[in-house]
Image (cartoon, rainbow, N blue to C red):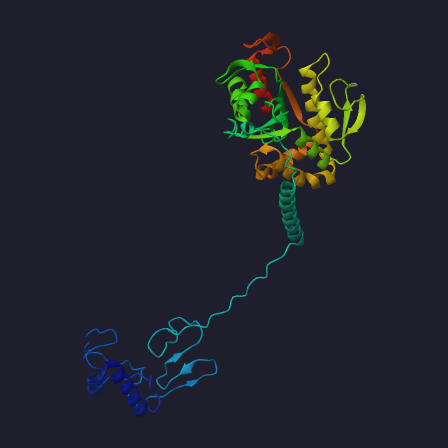
Length: 413
């Protein structure tokens, strides 16, 4: 029993012989042809010949009249019946068909790819940014690996810091200067809050007098710097939040040796500063009044001096003066080039949870500090008086509400 495909193949061969090559000339199927084709078409649907069907007069009805036709001068194909197909888009003309009855596939026109324009300036800037990024990461890593690791910060100072962002979304940094010595209880000589990503998008620094009377969670009313001795940076964070409404996201604790090392790394020739007065009492290096270049050790002595009539007020003012001088000295491109390396040394020698990504994100804010940083001291003028704490020590009794409003206004300026 032959298959349908074999029957169709044999039928095509017979028709080709009878019509002498005019295989596609139209004619009416005979009874024998229908018997050969069988009762099914290509789709398996039952078909029956239409007895009333008449072949149109313009079509060939038999193999004898079949003519393969010829091509006319205008490109159309004409047969013996007069019918023709024009290659143009004439109305009513059918497109050419494949030998299986479907539409013939039209050749695809290859798409011409547009050449991408290269912008030399943009490409150059992109390469520069990549080089800078690689340099910063490499210098930071090298600085961290080569840190002297001379810090003597105690385990108590390195406790977990549960920082949080401020209500306006800024991420304040708690800066603590520790005078830690081996075998001694740590004390905080410097307590500051640095804001880089606040509403003003420029560096702002708030300093707190260490003798300010505050309420320390779990310890009662006493000096602010006692919070550091009792619970490290985390307890200082809680105390500032409870008494002045300041929230800090990150912290950095720098001891004496780390401070001197970072200053000498960034500024080999020293930092230019205008000393307020002659100083010699209780410091390692005598200092004379006037403009001069100070190395890390001398700058530290100048910032810590308080043996005069101003006491802690004068020291806080000089600490802010030192911070402002450090930022202003960063105008030098050579100093900026050393900044990633110095930051790595700080991360290696100091205790901090400050991510490098935060510093990179606020690079422009740091650069603005080269023109000077905004500063505020707490307590503000006319908001404090002398008093004693629960342990009999001399303290500064402050108006907390007045100072909290002053800090809030300062950060929102």
